[in-house]
Amino acid sequence: MPNSDHAPKIMRDLVTTLLLATGHPNLVDDARICVSEVVTNVRIHTVTRLVYLDVTLRPGRVSVAVWDDEWEKRPATAVHDFHSDEERGRGLLLVQCLSADWGVTWPADGDPSHKRIWFALDERAVGAVAA
Image (cartoon, rainbow, N blue to C red; front, side, top):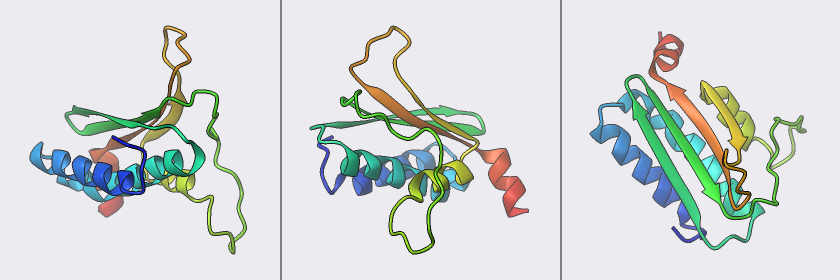
């Protein structure tokens, strides 16, 4: 989809609908936050025309990847310390806290034309936190 101010909401709503339709309602809230943060990072930190979304559904686990064509823009792969009065910088911290795993990858074939920021949500982890 176009990398616009509307992209985070549209992709968040798309993932919500997909999770509800496929029987993953327990993952919706965390997925909405993580998708919003990752897509917003693309919006803020790149000038790429398009942003892409991949969702992989497995029993008990959902993986989401957001990718763009600005491979030279290296996103942070570690969460940094921030001051309590800063308005930015908490997005990856939220993704790290809510997901079972996350990271940044480039295609295995060595093609540097895009990068993926991904995260995985595990229903067992969500159930353990809720209990």
